[in-house]
Image: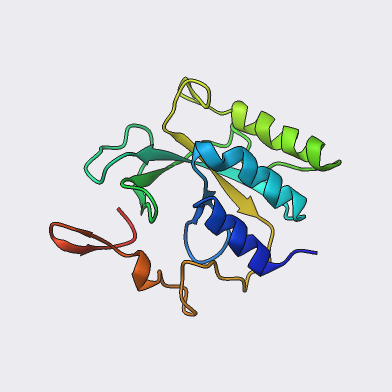
Length: 165
């Protein structure tokens, strides 16, 4: 049975960052990605789509592939959202046992090709997972109104920087 507290503990464990107030576009750095996927599937959450972000290592790093995006609440830099055309499949359909579902997700990740940039040859490409959960579930980083908790605000030389880069 899916449980919000379990989901929140998985997100915290892997320093995963949902964009917005819910559980869509959950950005997970490469070093945590495989374990995150396994834990999500083991706990019977459905990954129904994968989006893509470019990780920019510092606040001053210019994005190469993406548009604007969100500051990382765990790492030094920020995430720049990459928009694909309809010719790249966004949604995925998971069926079978956990191993089969995991393999489907990994095959989808390995199939990304954005103007010659693939997951294998472009270190800055970071997946973001869309989970099928109730719409009224807010993620652990926002308050009851859907705003980023103040403990996750970042400061720069000009003072508090907003959630978005």
